Length: 346
Image (cartoon, rainbow, N blue to C red):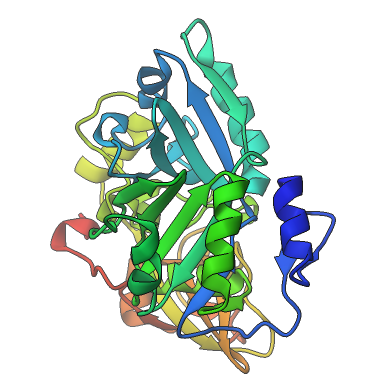
């Protein structure tokens, strides 16, 4: 974490552990107008004249489609087409940034450098150079309007002003990711904190779950192909951009195979908290991989959790799906908010 930002948060009674995770004592689980520190997210920067062309050969989406006013989701896959990391891609001037959980930054950095070879580009971890903050709620546009001449209107769109990028994210309420160097971010936080309720990062993850946005976490690294987590339904995969690591497997699944698993929103009542990577059970499942896995889960009330889960389509549509085993709690499954177009299962 940036030391200047860490001091700034500590002055506001934040508790920061050795891993850099930030918590605010007595912060509510949610708020109608929520301000969230996102220091758990890291940044990889690619610079140089061949940075974009290099990245184009490594990720699932079309890097050429990002620009000064638009970001995108993408992923880096193994040769077997399984996601090693997922991230948001954006530009800051000539620099390309990948934002993802800090725990996955070292592994992705190492893999990308393996493929760099003689490309005229550099790759670096700049997680401590910039600060990420979230603002969510019907209040958000009005609170941000004085700080930006124009706010992004479409999902994944970006506006930059005063050294801060504002990215509009999908959610059931207006939601903005704010990214910039410590000085302007401190000023922005100070302006917002008196009018928005500071909450812990779990609420931000819950909004991702409600929006149907998957995130590869250390527990689910190499667990899913992009289509299993609906990445093709949220503009996270390009099927026309050309080759990238794992592209043949991903394309074959799209055009020649039948998708047997996909990601659902789910709710469950449970004494124990579901965790990313937890296995799912459905009677009659013939797969050695079980009926599916949890992508992410967050509490939504006492003894209740919302989650994203990759589930066998046959099991989701015709049988009880439980966490852990035949006696585990039953999931209530629904399509994500963007639904399942007909082509998603073919």
